[in-house]
Structure formats: structure tokens, C-alpha cells
Length: 243
Image (cartoon, rainbow, N blue to C red; front, side):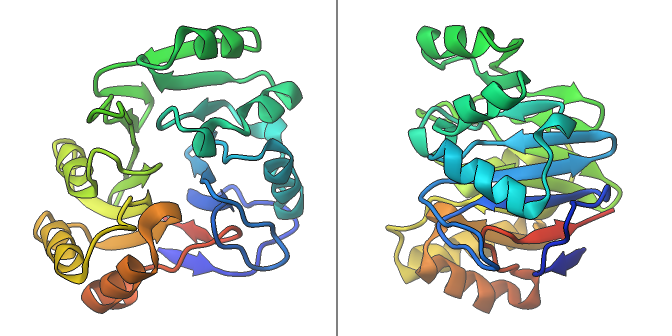
């Protein structure tokens, strides 16, 4: 996996993740509470979540050289505003198909459907060749996206409300997890809990982690101690490439 800090004038066509929206930002990008990333895999460019502020999301896209017209769809992890708030600004620019949990409110699905197709997800399924969803998990009814790469699964999460270990277990039903990236929902966890979570992930065979958004500074510190160089720092503007 190749990691780079400086973004180019235009995103490459390599398989990879580009963080567009996060609590932390570098290289002149804007930060904000929430998460969004461009997931590039095979011939597909997918917007994973849409952050909380649409205009901020669009400005970061422009700075990163991300062309919304090149995206094939939007994948929403869960209903919370900091992951869906920017959706409408995106759909105004490009009416895309939206993959969302079936439990989303009817009014949300109806509004999104005015722009393009809405695909409701309940169960684990392959939504595009080599691209899977965990299906709805937990009481928040959250889904994560799974990319079947040559080195194992790349898993991207929104907030991991169902538990990051539970998501990794679900992913492992398909293949071993190479990279686990996104919000891990660990802000309130203590050191002992975090070390146990890190140990559980390593026992499951997770090779690399990239905690973002709601993971928290304490979690990032513990994960760096436990995973070493296999813990990837994350912020808006971060790009990682994989095969």
C-alpha cells in the first residue's frame, strides 16, 4: 500500500481511498465534523458518505481535483447528519445512484430518489463487481463497504456504531482484511478497552488500520503502539493506494 500526503492536481486512476472530509485536514483543505472519502476501485469511483457540510465538501473536492461527474454512485453508511448532510450539494451537481441502508426514513429516500436511483440495502451483498456491503448492522443500522483486492479486503467504515471488531468479523466472512479505514467510534473508550480492540483486530488478521473521524486521539495513539507502521495517519487530503 502506497501512502502520500501531497495531493495532485487530479486524482489518479489507481485503486485507492482519498479522504475528502474529516475532523482533521492538511494541505489547505477544510476540516469539519464528519466523514467522506472517494473510493476508487477497478473502473468505479464511489463517494463514500458526504460529510456534514455540502459546500465545504465541494470546495475540498475542487482542491483535490475530484470531478463529481466521474463518480458512478454514492454509498451512505448510516443516517447521521455528519455523514449525509453534504449529499444534496453533491446530487445537485451530479444526480447519482445512492446505495443506502433500507432503514433510512422514507422522506430521505424520496428526496434522494428525485435525483437518481435509490438502492436500499438490508443484507450483505455484492453491489458492483468486487465491491460488497456488510448490509445493515447494529441498532443504528450501519453498513460498511468492502473492496476485494489482490491483497485482501479493504474495508471503509463511516462511524462503526455496530463495533469495529464486529465489522471486521463480518468482513472476514468474505476474505481476510488488509486495510480497515474510517471512523472507529472510539472517542469514549479507555486505554484498556482500546488495547483489547486492537488485539482483537490483530487476532482477526487485520493487517493495517487507518482510524479517522470519531476514532479519537487516544485510539490513534494506542493503535500506533499496537500496529506500528501499519497504523496509517488520516486527515482530509490523505490518499492511500492499493493493488
